[in-house]
Image 1 (cartoon, helix red, strand yellow):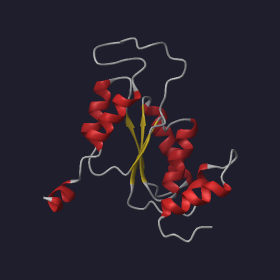
Image 2 (spheres, helix red, strand yellow):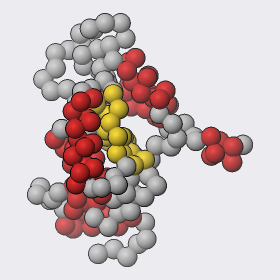
Image 3 (cartoon, helix red, strand yellow):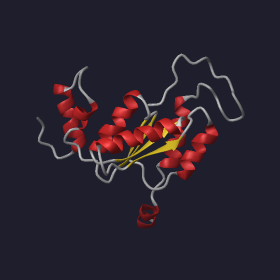
Length: 164
C-alpha cells in the first residue's frame, strides 16, 4: 500500500493492486476524505449513479444528484439520507438533452464544483432528432461537458476576490 499523503494518488496506486470487477463503490472510496468537496452526479437516481452518489456522500462530499425525473431523484435523496443521517445530498432537475435545462441548472449552481460524474446517458438512441428548439434526443457529450466547464466551474466570489 502506498504511503503518499495525496488521497487521489493513494487510491490510484491501491486500485492497480486490489480493485476488480466485483469491487463496490464503497470499497473504492474507502479512506478518501471528501469533506468540503462538492459533487454533481448526472443520472444519479438509478443504477451506478445511486451507488456513486452514496459513496461520495459516505466520503463526506456534498452531492447534487442531477436528474430528469425529479421525483426519482428526491426518492434517492431520501434513501441516502435514511441510510446516512446528516448526509449533504440534494436532487436537482437536469435534462442533458435540453440545452435550456442545462443552462438553467448551470445558472442555479452557486459556489465551487470539485467533482463532476457524467453518469447520465442515452441507450439505443436514434440519431439526433430535435424535439423542440434547443433540444436534441441524442446530445453530443462534448457540448454538455463544455457548458459544465464554462458555467459550473467559475470561481467562487471569495476566490475571485482573493485572486484579483
